[in-house]
Image 1 (cartoon, helix red, strand yellow):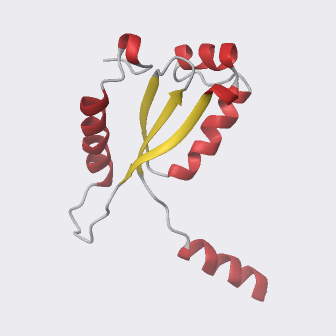
Image 2: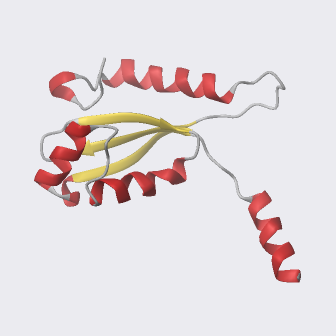
Length: 116
């Protein structure tokens, strides 16, 4: 029973970071900018790409298949700073943060995998 309580305590204390990430193809310099309410899910993105099941972005999956996982790097561009304000809308703030990075990096057409 003590073990179960410890797991619950650890779960409650675990921080979940939302933010904007970058996937970069180092062979052709193309990038994908994305957002996540839990940046730990990037491991799931890698898993889907490795298994050929990343249907969210077919161009990225095709180049992953062509170049292999060694050609790609994953980086967190910025973590969302959460506010204690009861009116703070994490989803909206995350969308604005992603928009900022999309405008800055312009990962569209020949430069990247994002769609306008």
